[in-house]
Image (cartoon, rainbow, N blue to C red):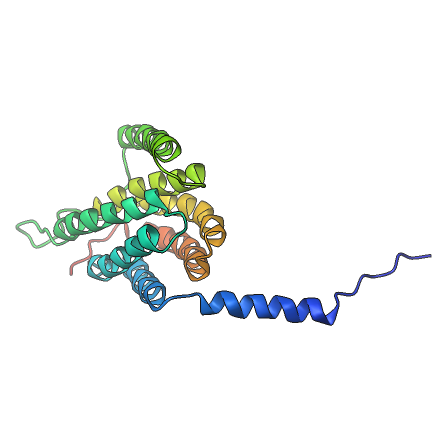
Length: 219
């Protein structure tokens, strides 16, 4: 005889929908605004537009507030790295509008040299271990490995983006892959969905920049 197929009771399905609706109600207006701002920012980044920075600044400041004051316990590394995003956004904004005497961009899209790759890899690992140790022994974080990894990869990605290095998209991909389950665990469901979208957009952004790398964009 064939094994009987298990049928999920109607009450289980109803209970699942009830839990889902409760979680949706937990999404705050600040989380919505931050998500929208950051998605728009990544879209501008794909287009190699300097508007990536003013739109991104709004999103990262709101996200920092959520990580520090609404997460239980706080996502210290993610909150701190979003403050870093703010500083790097201001710096990147400045670099992206710099032009040479012939009105071409001083910092066009380009590949990183092998030397930059080595330094970037070492810096990423050092940042990961450093942030992990801080979270592990100086905070009440219950996700030190994941929180520190997401933050370390994002720190590298943000620095590479400010310099318009195409490899920034690769580090965003790696960071987003881990950020998705991290935010699910912390009940930031909209942010988790946002990071999934960011992962897709990072893949698309890498190939878009790869196509544009031979041309100079003026803004």
